[in-house]
Length: 540
Image 1 (cartoon, rainbow, N blue to C red):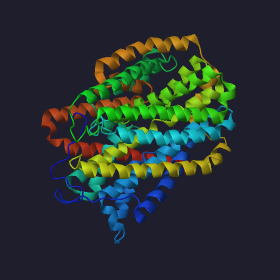
Image 2 (image 1 turned 45 degrees about the vertical axis):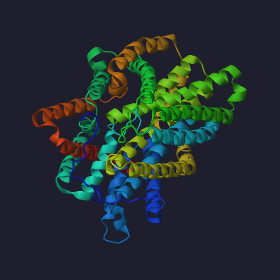
Image 3 (image 1 turned 30 degrees about the horizontal axis):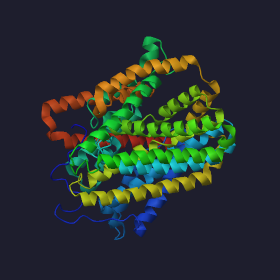
Image 4 (image 1 turned 180 degrees about the horizontal axis):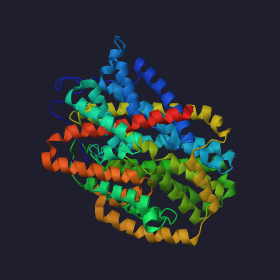
């Protein structure tokens, strides 16, 4: 499949191919009310899950299914939701609110609280909200470029599109989706990470084996090799080396696209010059946010002028790199090591020697970027597929603009909910578990051994990333797997790849549509079971 999903010729998206596509506005009263109500619900659920279980739910599919069910209510007013673009906007809003509240806001806020610095919570909140909005806006402006192509995999986005299609049309595609949902739920019941299995049918055939191998290395390094690779900072070093090379590869791809006359409207509607402006503007925006947080946190009086300038530049670079690395991993594998990459930037900050208050802000600021970036990519991929994969670029770009509005509305709802309720959790000493890891890392301090391990393992990470090139992202995906403690996910990825290989060899690519529907169902089933199980555990 080469990282893209081919839509069958007979697959319509609720209107005839020769008819004008409906121009849906997010500000339609009913659509706006339903989306905002679900966004509030999603933000509250996201906050509760992240502080109680350390996870956030994939509410893109949940929101899509709610919209599908709502559209089947036999009332004239609800029939409006049978238009797929409206379902796409509903799921975009609720997904943005959930990820925004949980990953982009509660985790950053919890870092200074876990470190015993509650006075930094308000500065961190203001900075995290700003970083989240910049994060989402940057992906919107980069979607369709060579580095984040619309034809990229984005597995969770494909899964949501498949669910919406199946709900709209039924038939053979719905049957394969239903089979996938059943498989996803069954596997999740016995503890298998089925989203990894489903992603294997959709992702890059070069990148995903490295992801699976990385998961297995992390899972079996202690029982087989008697080496704790996480404690030795091996995955962290690999990611640093791969990440540095990845940043240069991004710059190279942009330079090549600026020099190229390739303007394929289905993918490369964004010029290299515009991508350069977006990336440059994003970095400047992150510097301004870092400066704002530093002023509010009192770093102007605490740090020397040189240290303050160094901190602002490093914080912006850390957020910038974190965003791109998380986005690349999410696009290729459907998984992204946001927690771990934020820990890497924190570790480097510790080695540099920034004081604890600055490190608390650094960890939170870095963690605030990335999740909204990746989630926006998933949602825009869903919309891209539903709108016909760029066959009508006017409709595609108009649809993306409405998705941006929906996502920003979801982020704003997330900010309001977090402002209103974060004290409810912190007063009971409830913070996301990963924040205690960040706090413990700061208290442990730096050592030459950590710095040496990071430097040594950065070399093979850089070489592997260089060998694979920008399209395969071998170094990023291997280190992503090695940062995640889930050996079952590794077996799931490799098993899915093996099945995909056999099916492709025996039957060719003509069954790719059914395989995509099945994979989307698997991811949806895993998300539904995980969401239901998480909510059930919260009530116990």
